Length: 514
Ligand code: SIN
Image 1 (tube, rainbow, N blue to C red):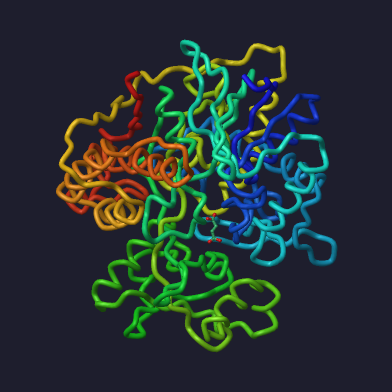
Image 2: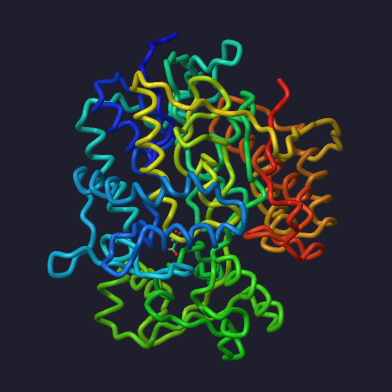
């Protein structure tokens, strides 16, 4: 071992930075490693904000109800209560760490997003909440004596029986491999949006943590539930760019390319219906009109308001010749958030000793089958705080319970038909066959293809092959789980089983046979 730390944190989005800062406050010897530069994380791209029932007309009960309703029967109620009740304290942490939320007359402004029954989204820099959080926490982490290794990724977790004892890491600059020992490891590597060819996620979101944990034997849950955001900018040859739901919260309306406003026909909340419903309705309208996009209209607001409230969206659209104060914005659904991940309890524990998971990489159960908008940044700080409390406390906490009532599977890998994998092939396969709308046939095809491609993937000593390997594992877990789940629920829509089935009110869990 090169050196041994009290805590090794993997990832430098809000989950990794907040965890590392809290651990450092406890006097721990912390190593944080991140595969890109410290500020390269999905957090930076979060636009909407962070949900918290702190408004005068709001309540914890209402936030809980909205979270549970959105999750379509699979939300862990105890975890969701912890989520909504802890919000004010964790918001205070972020403010203490330097995050400046937008205010008017000294009061924090609260935005509205779909499926929330009250305005409760705290935002910063207008539509750049993630950027404000990432910059504040990364500068604090750098000042606070945490050892930070950039351009470094974990190749494998080191095990001693059921205990995680360290990690083999690879410098993507020098190609050198090093073993680090750690009393505890927190995976905070973010989601797996890069499974899909169309995604709002940055390039770093390749599901690395899920793949590492799965290969080490940890339980992985709910991978069939990827959230597709209904409104990503859709312009030929332009990168997929999120057009925040907060625009619809401010009254933006959706029209199909024939000029018809369609959402009132699909849901009583129209444009503010739960995200899965807006995404699927949008897909149906795109099919009906044989077009690759619909149109979002926010022209009821004047230019001054839009520039102040949505500066980044305003600027980015303008770069493509769209003046959002005058023009409708071409948008289409894109993969956005991985609800599934490494199964944890409410103290961040995974099924492996000494291994914890926090943020999008974790599956705490608070999102169920469909995450309520802007609950993800909140989930991260709530459960990161509890993880640190658990790790650095002498008290007895309830330990992780292995899966009993849920469906337990593992992936197998046997056929080799000669197709060598590459990232684009996998992403297109996932988009076409494990996308917003799936069928038994499409999933059967995807499962077979992915099993074959996975058998050729090799864990070599370069970032690309490690990321491809991770995407193949995450994609396989997602495709298998979606194939097994013969119903439609939340973000998982099976055209051959379009109804919810109470027999499926349970989770699909994977565990690799080692
Ligand atoms: C958005 O700004 O529309 C995304 C918010 C979220 O995913 O929670």
